[in-house]
Length: 91
Image (cartoon, one colour):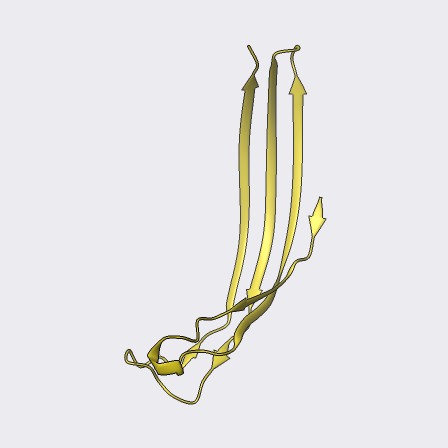
């Protein structure tokens, strides 16, 4: 299975007297899933799966700084591999 979700995360605008972010974090994700399994009999199954993905979120800048001095949330990139193994026993 492969997918390319387009993301938009709206930020909270009710804090700091309405001066928080009123924009959204925009970006995209690319994911690839692969699985392989073997059914030993009617009751026992074992499988291995691997998910690989890449996520990118664009930066947000604002015209003021908050109490902690933050003026910008930088661009964020994430690349990951997620292997997993599962064994199922039906009794």
